[in-house]
Every structure is written in C-alpha cells, then in structure tokens.
Image 1 (cartoon, rainbow, N blue to C red):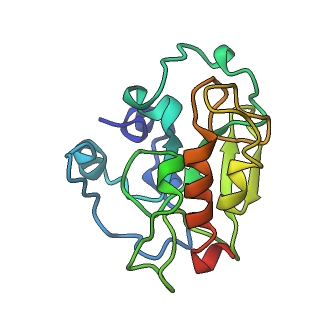
Image 2 (cartoon, rainbow, N blue to C red):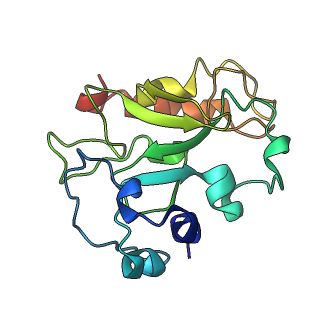
Length: 174
C-alpha cells in the first residue's frame, strides 16, 4: 500500500495522479515487488512519485514530522515519474525508460524540465540533473542547500557526482 493509495479517500479522484502528457496513461501499475497492487485496484496509474526520504521509510531516516524538514523550500516532496514506484531517489536519475520517446529518462519531462513539488507547497520546473546542485560538500557532511533531495548528513557527494554525470547523458535532459 502506497502513499498514493493512502490519500485517495481524501482526494477522491485518481486523475489527479496522472500527468496529462504522460505517454502511457492507461498502462496498469506493475511492480516486481508487488507494492502497487492497491494502487492498481483503485485505478491509480503511474505518473507521480514521492521523494524516498518520506515515501519509503526503509530508504532513509524516519523524520517523523514535516517540522523535521530543515529546508522545506529546497527539498523535493513529489515529482513526475515514468516508473510505477511510489518513491524515487537520486539513484533513479540516471535510469532510462526505454519505451519513452527518444529513450527518455525516469522522469517525465516537458522541454527538458520536470515539475517538482516542494515541502513548502511551491512547484517548480527544473532540469532533473540540476537537482543535485554543485555537490560541494564532503562525504558524511550535511548537503549544501542546492542539493534538493535530502537535508541530513550522509549522502556521499562522490557517488552522487557519478549519477549526475549519467543523468546528463540522457538526451531529453540536455
């Protein structure tokens, strides 16, 4: 059961979770790990994902409350996604959706930009590769403010640099 399924009783509209320009709007949810069965039964299609730091507590520290987010205007909450997973993280930025036009990336883009919603409620279109920022912090330190994925010590800027370089090779993000 995913966050998308959990919010449906409040939203009451599965169309909200689908981008109008998504290439496969009626494709059923499928996940090799079976996490999206409830989404599929409810009629939720793939199109949006949550940042892994809240959408999947197994992939990051448990922050407990929204107040724990120290930079709400600079931390991604939701993003457009071509994959069925309810959560996405930095490791997914170099992924390619082979079926997408031109070998597109994991994130649905509009002229090279993806719509991201942030913890403070604002939405901004950004090139996915730019969400890494300059990666100017030492491994194990707190990320710089231009890193839009996490706000706690731990992300290794050296590993992220490799993923950022791979992301820059995806034609639609150039």
